[in-house]
Image (tube, rainbow, N blue to C red; front, side):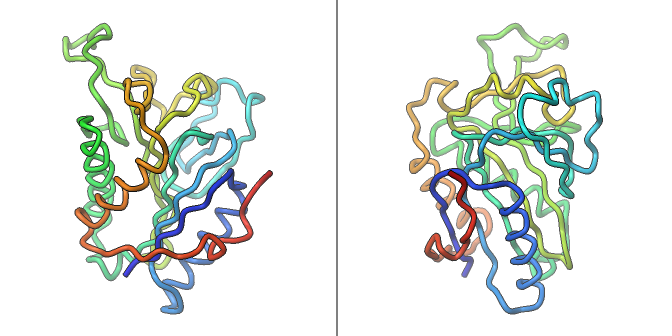
Length: 232
């Protein structure tokens, strides 16, 4: 069983990060169950361990949080479903590459519930969708926009951080960074693709897809299991 927590409102980034680290430590010690935590953050940029200074193009726009997850700059904000993933990768085979592939498959299966085809590309982290209505790539292939970012860290073989799926964020907020260091492609969301999707719809799809991909049965935990994290 994996604890499943959904937090309404906006969650402070540093408080959430502290809670994740403590939970990962407890999982490694065998004193807490694995956990998926769904939330939204206020507008911010986070810088992974590979972030490059030149990719922060508007450093005054939103708060910037250096973090220990893998990856480069990404944006979090209202309308984006963040899923923090605290799972025992050691117990699940100690195969980090396979674990990341499972996270990608989780996003793709979630998108499939809305008849959106997500793809992964070599050399481009995250999940992408083709945009045939846009000018093609120089190679002649259809244009592609990023719809979900993935970035994790392991502590004693327990993961934390996770995925962020664009449901209906303000896409102009991505303009202050080069998302994940990739300049040649844009970003999109489910609503930008023309789908009248709301966050509860996405949460249901994430839950079903999680069981499909990971084989675990989530069990609901009250929001107070993640308190105190709410930001006014």
